[in-house]
Structure formats: C-alpha cells, structure tokens
Image 1 (cartoon, one colour):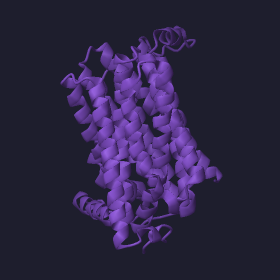
Image 2 (cartoon, helix red, strand yellow):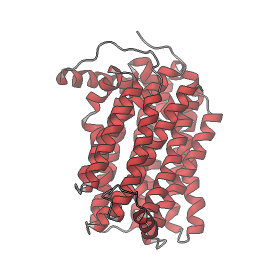
Image 3 (cartoon, one colour):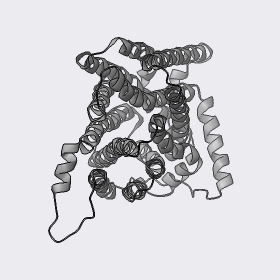
Length: 421
C-alpha cells in the first residue's frame, strides 16, 4: 500500500472518530433534555436518512471532482452540524446535518480505493479501512463516553486560554469543542490526499436524469449474480450493526446495570472484535474465496442470542468480541466483492452510492422497528432473540440464493473480471 492510501486511512480514521464521539455526546444531550427513550435510536435514523435521500446525487458528485477534494468539502459539512449542536439546535436536526456530510463523504472514501488499487488488493484495502474504522468506533465511543463523564467535563471546563474567551461554559459545549477539533484534523488529512488522475465523463446535473441513472445502476447491481449476493449480505450487516449498537446500550443498562459512559465501552469491545475479524479476513481470504465466509453470518446471529444468558460484564466482554470477530470476518470480503463488481459494471462513485442506499434503507428500517419495540416496552431479551433469529434466517436465505445461482451458471468466474467499457 502506498503513501496516498495511508493518508486516506488517516482522514477516514479521524472523521469516523469524531462521528462516533458525537453520537455519544448527542445521546447525553437528549438525556439532559429529558427526551423520551424512543428518541435515542432516532439519532442514528436521522443520520442515515441522508444516505437514502441523496443516493441518486452523491455518486455523481463524488465522480465530478478529485476524491480528496470531495472528502474535504463533505468533512466541512460535518463540522457545520457539530457547530449547530453547539448553538443549541436540537440534536436530531444537527446530527442529521452530520449525516448529510457523511452520505456525500462515503462514495469518495470507498470509490478512491478502486481508483488507487488493483482488484486483488481490494480485500486487504477493505480490511484496513474496516479495521481502522472499527478502531475509530472503539476510540470514538470511549472518547464520547469520557467526554460526557462529569469528572472529565469539569477538567475541560477548568482549562482557560489566556486573553481569549472561548464561550465554552457547559459540559456539552466542552465535549463538542473537542469533537470539532477532531473533525478539523480529518480535514487537514483530506487536503493531503493525492489526486489519482482518474477522470469520469462529465457528470449529469439534471436531478431527473440523475435519478434515472441511479435507477439503472441500482437495477444493474441487483441483477448481477455476484452483485446481488454481496449487496444483500452487506445490506443486512449494516442494518444489523447499527441496531446492535443500541441493543448493546439497552442490554448493558437492563442486564448489566451499567451507566451510559460505561456501556459505551461495551460498544468499543464489540468493535474491537470486528477489527480482529476484519484484519484476519484481509490476511486469509482472497477475493476469489469471498463467498465462502457466508456461514459465519448465520453463526453470528446465533451467538448474539446467547447475550440473553449473560448478566456479568466479565462474560459480556468475550461474548461481544466473538460477535465482532464473526462480523468483521464475513463483511470485509463481501464488501470488497461488491466494490469490485460495482467498479466493473459502472463507476466507483455510482456503485458506492447504490450500496449506501440499500444499506441505509436497511438501517432505517431496522432502527425504526427497534424504536417501536422500545416504545412498546418490549423486554430487551425478547428484542435480542428476534434480532438473532432475523440475522441467521436472512443469511441462510442469501446462501440458498447463491447456491441456486451457481446451479445455473458459475458466477465465481466473474471475480477478477476487468472493467466494462
């Protein structure tokens, strides 16, 4: 991997670090406002709404400029969302603006990998990007938990710049100030990302034509025998992962009796497992063998259900690491395969936009169902069982569909195919 690749990794790390710290800070702000419990999962829902609403447009935007410049502009939008929260705009609205920036950031972040690297390096590159993203989730979640801790808040507020009045007077403002600095570090790395020299044809600007083009890309990827399996699996994974974040927080509160700042560490423990799994997949799973990891998705759903038997955090840690390892090991090869097929069949930005659209429809649907379960006061163990059964069942359906495709045509021969012109 070259220097440009590692600059992209650094930019992604700091931007994701800030995103995850901001989620915890926003949850704490909602608690300060005495908002109802069902509003908490809506934070993530508002964040991902942009991925769905802007899907037809962000791919064209990502392909219209050098990817590093796109990442810089969209990172500034995230900073604007953070500033809104600082200025007492409702956390749901402010976090939605951060989601707007993230939705436009993503096609550039993943699309540049296919411009920079050959297909055989995509699994390793995805191992890096998922591994570092997961480390940023761990540290970002822990950082967010620390920033909302009363003792840390008091230390931050006691710090004064000579002469300058910063206007930071409350614990939440102190937390948001640290998060904004983290976004600024990401923006500096964005400016250092090299131009790959890849240029796409002039991008359409007519909204109706963009929607039509997106619909064609959407259909192309779902009709492709490899695209449909990898897209189906990653769509399930990201919806499940977003929901599991909130299930773990609720489970920690109800079964382990942990406050938010301690429960946030459990999310980090799960993410640590994903990092190990992602790293192992990058090392041991070549692109040609990417579809062999699907049974691990079934196993992951079954292991999640054992959370209902755990009431000690000493058992919770290894269990969440195991769930994370299984998740990371099966999603990284599927992500790489999907990027490869998207790059072969269409442009990098457009294929990632289709991927984001599907994955975030899944996130929205699963978070809305989870918010409904919380509103209905469903027992957290019942939620965990339903969640585990759903994940295992959907993975088994994906495996059956792939086996059916293979009986008609050896779609594995398409892996490594060169870009269509």
